[in-house]
Length: 278
Image 1 (spheres, helix red, strand yellow):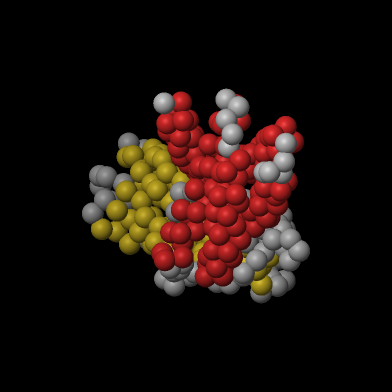
Image 2 (tube, one colour):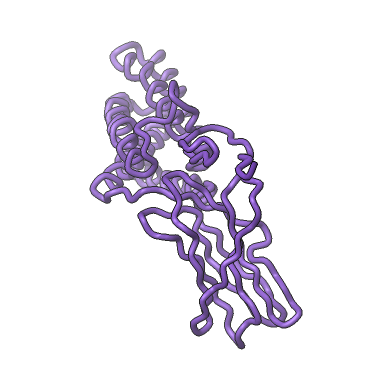
């Protein structure tokens, strides 16, 4: 009964941790509502766009037609002037399209809505969206499943440590799943999405790649000591679990790959403003 409870608890903790990491990341959609006079503006703005087409931006404004609705955008981290596009109107919906960008290219955008003498920008803080290539589901789905399974087993191992359960046999499976999902399928996903196989150390500072590498390497002391005295193996496993959990507390896609328009290539790490109109 105790083992069943631990497995169930591990599953729900894993789901919660995965949701937290996803929803706190820079590519999670921005949703909300704002008032435009007496009208309620309801929006849901994507912060990531995959595939070859343009990215649609739409907003719902019930009631009489607005005086004006435009989409404002420019390339991210640039000192360029804002470009404005009139939004198409159908029923209560207004829509426009952001032009397609190269893989890892980013645009910053917001809407400017006018109703009579009232003008609002939605949202108040502009949204940043990143473009990427389409990743086949036959690659993306196994990647997600293996990464989730590795986290799930990590949480289960951690709970086993709390109740002094022998969890050494799970360590090897965790390392295997993390290796397949993160170090094999992960680079394939990134190749489809951003044209780069590996953007972590020693080639770049992509935080997602580096987190995966660090987590994988930190499991090796525990894996190596699996057949040794329980005392030393336990300490190594505590270290591995803590590192893995700390890594998953970092929002997904932080310091991710980004196309540098000035240099014409994908870069990683902390980016600087690109002076593009000199």
